[in-house]
Length: 88
Image (tube, rainbow, N blue to C red; front, side, top):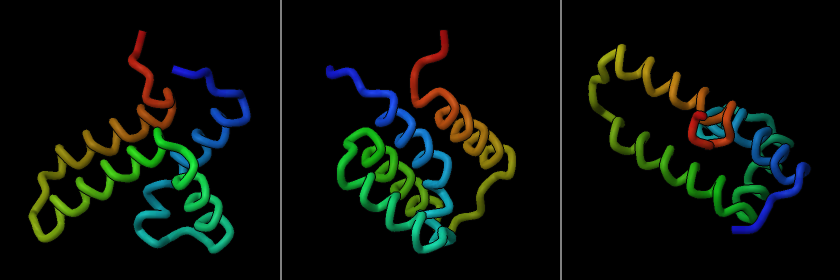
């Protein structure tokens, strides 16, 4: 595994913070362009995008338990804050 530079890590962090809005089509044009470019270049963030898209497809048209939805959002925030690393 190769080490990521601080600028690469920062770019991944910024992408993870706006990824949901991007996937929902709620990002401004500049942000959407930057996220799309990053997703083409970064395997790790691309996998995160693929996972989120699969979750959205699976949930489409189904009633979702509010508690489960809150837990998923909490997990998303946690992953964004830690960059997907396992907690200590």
